Length: 156
Image (cartoon, rainbow, N blue to C red; front, side):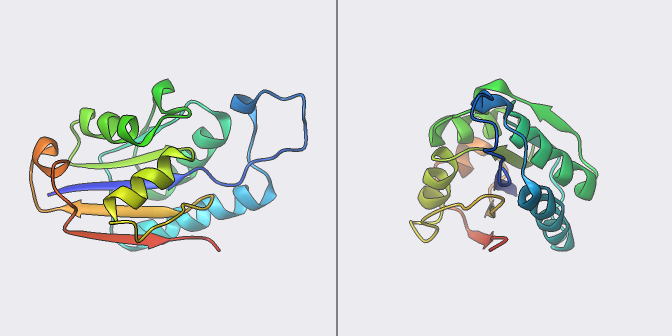
């Protein structure tokens, strides 16, 4: 079985207009939502083999909250920063884990979630979590088929 969890980074702080986008931290809501959503995912029994995170500060902070709740290591992947849907899926498959969690950005996350859910997930709000499961044992097979099941959760 192949399982992919997509997590859009938690809400970021726009308070410093001089700060580079890559360096923006989480705001208060983001710092509250990330651990809460991580615990909710942990409560489902989901345990990824690896967490792949964008290199952006807000994504790494979100990934750390999920890593703590799920007791899983984080691998920072600079290619996930601003990545389109196809790159997000390719990087997850390339990890070769059977269960992978990806923390990244929109619009790529929403596009991929929509594609995998048959457009049922129209938008991934900040810190939303979508999981997709295929009953295949190989990423090449799984990514050529629609998922057998999926879930969606949002802090809002």
